[in-house]
Amino acid sequence: MKLIGYFRSSAAFRVRIALNLKGVAVEHASRHLRKGEQAAPDYVALNPQKLVPAMVLDSGDVLTQSLAILEYLEEVHPEPPLLPGDPADRARVRALALICTADIHPIQNLRVMAYLRDNFGQSEESAFAWSRHWIDTGFEAYEASVAGDRKTGTFSHGDRPTMADLCLIPQVFNAARFKVDMKKYPTIQRIFEASMKLPAFDAAQPSRQPDAEP
Amino acid sequence: MKLIGYFRSSAAFRVRIALNLKGVAVEHASRHLRKGEQAAPDYVALNPQKLVPAMVLDSGDVLTQSLAILEYLEEVHPEPPLLPGDPADRARVRALALICTADIHPIQNLRVMAYLRDNFGQSEESAFAWSRHWIDTGFEAYEASVAGDRKTGTFSHGDRPTMADLCLIPQVFNAARFKVDMKKYPTIQRIFEASMKLPAFDAAQPSRQPDAEP
Image (cartoon, rainbow over all chains, first blue to last red; front, side, top):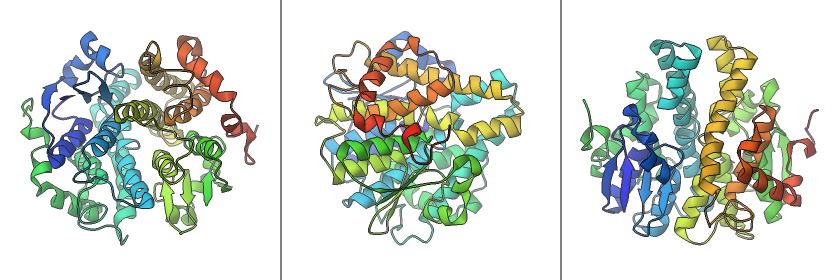
């Protein structure tokens, strides 16, 4: 298997954590998003969405969309599980994951920020405020969902990492870039600190990737 | 079970189709999004994200996020299946669903359009162009993914509806509101027409809901 990502991509980061937790070795390749390498014809042939990550299976099948890849890994490499057993609990974990992957990240990713600047003439500062607004909106909901819920443990659901944490932690890294005040989100911050103590999360972080830039 | 939605919500529409296909009867309730009823304290207590849908189980558990609800329904009411059996095929279906649910809809929903007008002073026309841009970007990728792929059948994956179609069809309704030119997407249009012939899709459409407005 080959994972095509980018060191700073939150979506690729999620998949790297899953691979590390499950002990699945893959070949890593990278497309430089700021140089537009995800729009090169050979990559578009793999993923018409022109987004990373893409995972090329040994069968030749190409998987795209980080959440679909996480579900695939969960089905094919079930140990350790990234979802709990009870259907309502699984729904809770998936809903938390989707706060980050559907309702924060797509609204403030690179291509959206570019549109704000190029089509609406917004300044860098204004685009940053936009980004912070959607991160804050999502994190307020995430914090309210996990704080005080007895299903929350060391991690977002119970005492071992789930798909929710795999999506939350890259979003916290992203929030730091946009100078979001994490003091407002003590439970998220606590989960972040617990997660980053695990080698699987630590090794997956952007600065530890071969294509990392300062 | 009770589904709290809104007639025009694409996310609630997805869940209504799944309930119809699986023959699961639920009580329906509605929050009027344009009147801001999703921000009322009693609803925020159910869903801190202030988004619809939310599904209240008989156990009292509240499920949020349409994709998490679809996965829950698939696990608890497996027939007819909304996902194929093979893990790589399941990933294909989920990735197609996520094109609509993560990379189109959240970028052009009501609250984002409101931000463009209120904070960036964009006109209605300019906000419409924004919406069309992200629908076109997503539909171009969707069309390229399904056209000519031998796994595509009458529907996005094979000859019966999957989670991908449940997410695609509400997005096509949404595209019509923003006057997207569907002639550019002949495969999507063909899948849309096949889907709307099924009573489960037809009965779930916005205009057939009790809270529908002209």
